[in-house]
Amino acid sequence: MGTWIGSLAAERKNALLLRVTEDDATRVRWELLREFSGNTADHVETGRTVAELLDTAATRRHTREQQETARHAEEQTRRQQTQRQARELHLNKLAQDLEAAWARVESFTDTRKPREYDQAVDLLRDLQALAIRDDHAGTFAQRFTHLRERHQGKPSLIKRFTAAGLIPE
Picture (tube, one colour):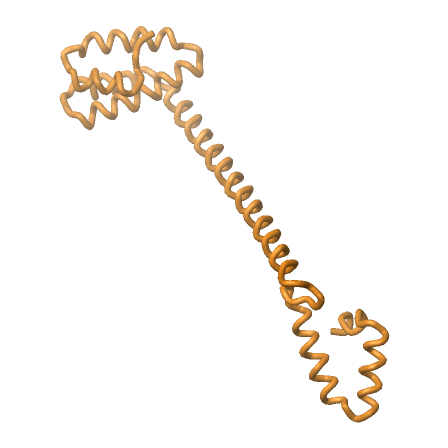
């Protein structure tokens, strides 16, 4: 409060002091307290018009919205980075034993169960991504073409391959 009193104009301070000396101290105290509490609120300032207050509020709202948008963008970027890292770890683990992964694809496609067909497709997508990443797309295409030819009589499986974009080059 001392800083606030120090910021009052000299004329105002002199007038208040004069009133205190004239036994009006209690009223001066309440007046000062009321002014001080009103001036500590950001939205109440003397001498500003309603239009100025509305403009200030709009500016603050716009700033908050920009900050919120930036925060959301940063969060999304972090989530995407985390997903990419998890995907890369998954592909690295898969790359450690490609033959076991292809054997799982074979076991999934040897059944006639839609759920296992879906698992085969998911694993084939991963194998395709790994082949592209490691520059072995030709090897993947050969193995996949052979797999597709062997299971040509399973329209549900072939349809899943096509829908997943697993078309041999």
